[in-house]
Image (spheres, rainbow, N blue to C red):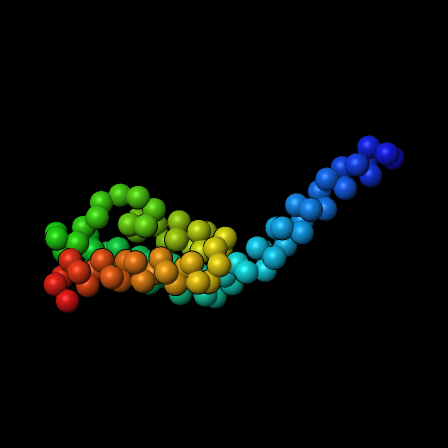
Length: 95
């Protein structure tokens, strides 16, 4: 019983940190929109040689990669990621 009480005492601070972070995670409908837009942006980048950034999670056409990442990120971080791709596409297209 004492061992269980010690484990609970150790885990309580971790939950105190993790619960607010989970509450800030982006909701599934938001992430569905984000992932669909991300795939469209990547497809556009790949269609324009000057914009093609190659591999990596930011530039994958795998919807699930974008969606799963979004679910664990705060909405502001997700919006910044989308804006980063948008800015790259504007610059590489000369706009």
